[in-house]
Image (cartoon, rainbow, N blue to C red; front, side, top):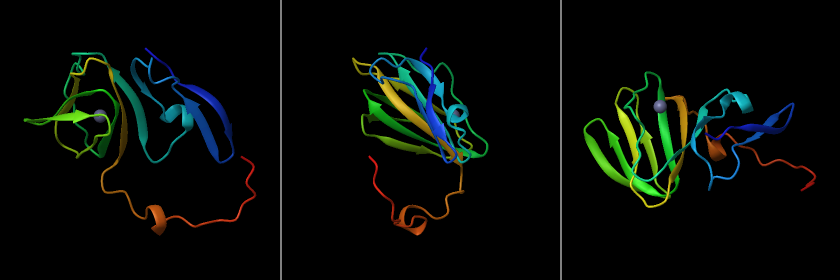
Amino acid sequence: MSDVKVINSGKKYAHASVGDLRTFEGKQFVKDATGATSCEISFGSLPTGAEVPFFHSHKANEENYIILSGAGRFQVDDEAFDVAEGSVIRVATGCDRNIKCTSATPMTYICIQAQEGSLGGYTMTDADITERENKM
Ligand code: ZN
């Protein structure tokens, strides 16, 4: 099981890491490490042939799964379909879901939970271009 480490933080940010995703194992939630207030993010990895050992559903939060590597199957209620690196799957509240790795290499993914229907402004309707000295 991999863990999450806080790398650095300031008044307006927190930086945490689960480390090298090529060797990441298990499931790791990161909200506590970053202090996130709008969503919960978790990293997950499944070895070949493995699936999460239970279906689950959510009452208030939708989930967005982003497949980072590998491939497999995803099931929502009674509907199953193929997923692979680059797939993004949004799952609504009030339904069962599960994920399985069918590739020869582990499937690594991110799951973002956020309150369904809570997204207001986004990208350019929420952002402003600002002036700042570049120190990178
Ligand atoms: Zn969930």
